[in-house]
Image (tube, rainbow, N blue to C red; front, side, top):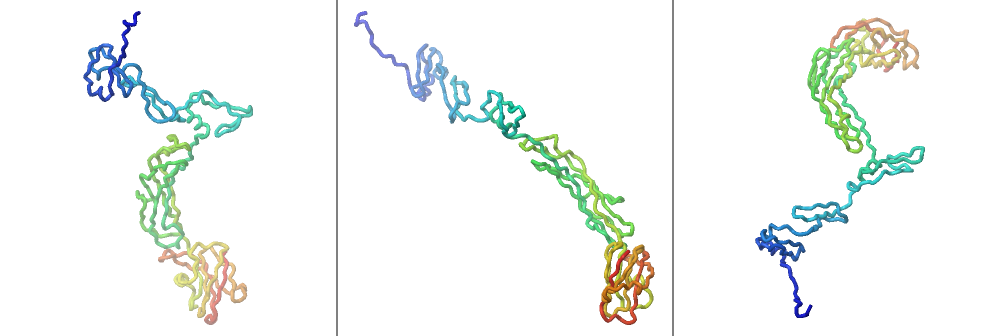
Length: 373
């Protein structure tokens, strides 16, 4: 071909910035005409009909988003772009390709006599595998709710004493070894003395007078709703171990009665000891006296008589003169029986009474050590 017939030219595609193309989005490219965004390197081919804004980008455009060292996601968006997402390689996304063989114990893995064991790992995430390796689920121990009932006046009192019984009932919520709080609360209360029932957590019953046969107790029933679900040592709920709705019962301590014992000196030796004189003695057991108990009857200066009184069937088997080198003096005492009243003039009961009269008023304080049988 002759050199004069060669046409030398440069072809420049229609181009502009993406922002400028948007300013002229109604531009219609000729069929096959190419338009280039100079700042994004994206391009479109016209069809002679659609405006620039209606044309799709040509080819596959790649867009990278996110921060990190590896590609963790890929998708094609509505604009036809292949969007690659950068991120971090997490233990929740790394998948194990095969099972593991262990020849030494690690975490929850034990080695049998064969010397090795295979632990399932295939298709598990790294987190799932390691969690099973180092953490073994253990169910919690559960402490059930318990009722308690306090009789505020519990104790032994001298027969004839008057008391107004009052109480406090309560329910412990129980517990879950690994939490949470059980959420148990008392719903209803029923507290009875056998003849009357109260429905409050605290209350008071009618006054009673303590007798020889008194064994006064209260009984309570407390109901409660179901507890929340407990968790195991890995924090997973275990609904099957939740405390079920129910009730608990409790019995209080008792109020009981005793016949008091009395001893001491008096300044008169007229007549024989009476119930009133015996009850007025300074020394008292203030409790039930038993065989083997001992005591010291105090005889003060000016006293003419010393008295020791114990409720039948208790008796006195030994009385020693403390000032007289603890010499036995039982034979010096006169033994009689006297009906002695309880507190507040309550019904009298037979007492074994031992007394010794002085020829003259006592000029030196003394003690008479006695033993009960």
